[in-house]
Length: 224
Ligand SMILES: [Zn+2]
Image (cartoon, rainbow, N blue to C red):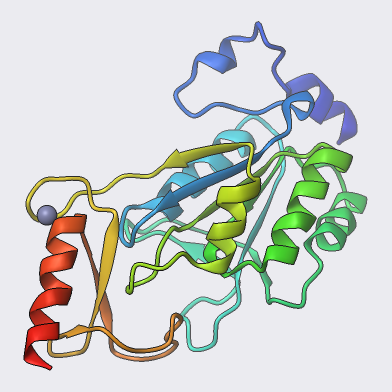
């Protein structure tokens, strides 16, 4: 497997570098943060990038947050219907150790982390150490801000520590880029209060541009 990784990993001159979804070489291991708002398709982007490695014979290691009451725990699923098995992390998991343990079973070309907003700052440092000391690229995908417009802790740490950041974009109903999200109850009413992470409820999320998010939140303020 070590031989496979060495032979398949592209040199800087390789034509693989010109594919739209790049393959990253160990020598250029970096900590990446792909951030977005809700429903932008970040899991789709993650699964496509992982697939690009696997179809070239390289292994990837997928991790996602373990939240109760979520269908398909231990699985990264995209809204367009594709999915892949993944290990899960909770705040107490040492991700440096988890990745090092996985590497004992064979080489991996890249680590992919979904729901990266739920990482702790400590875990983001563990991922940074993985990149720096083990030289495995780590690609994190997560939400930037919660429904109240505040950074998630994992996202704040990734904004501070990642080597490269990319935005996975989606649009507001007005056509502008959506950067914010509102939480709605089952009747479509916008919620201003509540825990940053709501598990197992009937709420839904709508991504909006900042102006329409302000309108949605202000409208509610006038009601209360
Ligand atoms: Zn808008």
